[in-house]
Image (tube, rainbow over all chains, first blue to last red; front, side, top):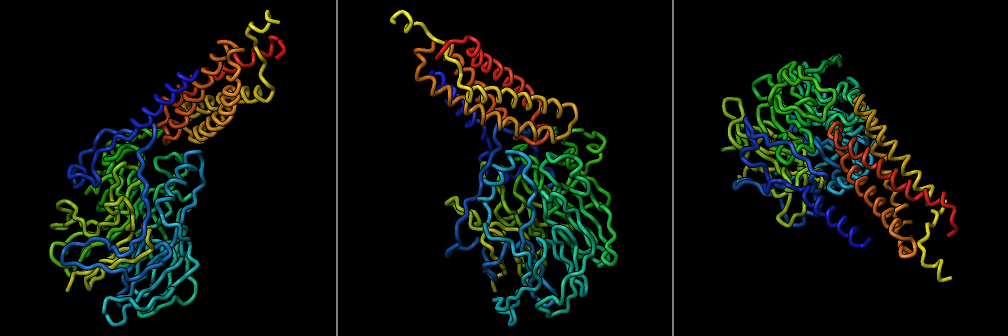
Length: 434
Length: 142
């Protein structure tokens, strides 16, 4: 008896060890980023490849920025900061919260939920907006106030004239805002309900059209790949166009698995989005992406990815939808988990003047972690051009510890990048050194 | 005295053990039926049911395996048939565990491996239960 049992255990160990077979890249290689990424074969072992962040304190360390730039923490001890908004007078609003709470349906949900939670902050989400002010323009945000509280996992922020819009995980709401205000007067007014059943992907990203008539709301899918059922995906994995006045809404673009951040290209009406793609198909497939959004466009989820690459996990399949799927503009690399996007400005200086910043929260479904940084995607003639450049990095140290995880990014037109970090609960500000 | 001691004896399973053996068959049968329901309907709730039934089958099967391990102390008195019973139980549990990992894949990624393994695991569980419970019919005293 003893010997067969031993063999069984040994055989089983080999089986498990054979499961992790990722590439030895810590970041997506040049083949896996850009407008035409190479898409390797799908693969998934008996266990999904996992490397969960092991959190540590920053101490005296700071994230790494390019030569000629400086980084400072302008707010610490926030309550899970996600997205930020630079107001016209230079004040910064930060949305803090933690949503979700989708029911655990399988033993996997229970186990994976426990494991993944280890890579995140254990702080309770603030469900509030914090306002930061630098009264004397010395780069120190000495005034801090709670602009609004008792919100429901606020995420996306947008300002149209004197109306401040906030995308909670269940509704789009509006505050009156007068320049210089540090606290909202009264509770918000609901513009429209947003799809919130289950809320597997709970973040509701937000931006306003150039003319201020419309708001765009990014709504994530209710599963990785339909494992909560097709019915749960009604009104999910899409961007809504919402009339700012009436709250009337329609799907603007669909098939976008988790559109976590939206931005309008300056000087145009063009909407851009970063999207997190599906997990458990392999370390380098499919890529998360940055793309301009075509009105009425379908981008593949759940039936296919990067155009016509069919995902065999979806039943029933839909060849017509697959044929209609648009390939995105620019691959950011698989599992980097892009959660923030913002267009740069000439005040950011030099090679970082024309392009977008993308906050990459970082992977779990990859043996060699990817993301955990803010990259700059250079643009030329209004289109992405060239490889992404590390702009803020060092969130994952060489010691294997993770000190921060970037989420939302926003650009101060006076020349600063604001980065929300939901692991160390810090707001970082990167400026060209003067 | 010496004439009876040398003869291997089929010792009936303790009723508690017998309960767990029987439950394992029921649970793995439920898992297979759920897999079949998912395969024909594409309704993911069925594969969720299968995942939980397999997990419960492993829990109950683990108890049976423990009973068997304890029983092995007297393996010399129980004979090769008991050893075989233990091996079938171990195979049931090991394949059941692999099946649970396959069922942890999302949506249709479970198929067809999950369905095939569910059938094999049920078959093994039935064989183990047959071997374990058939001792009851022999009517021999422990």
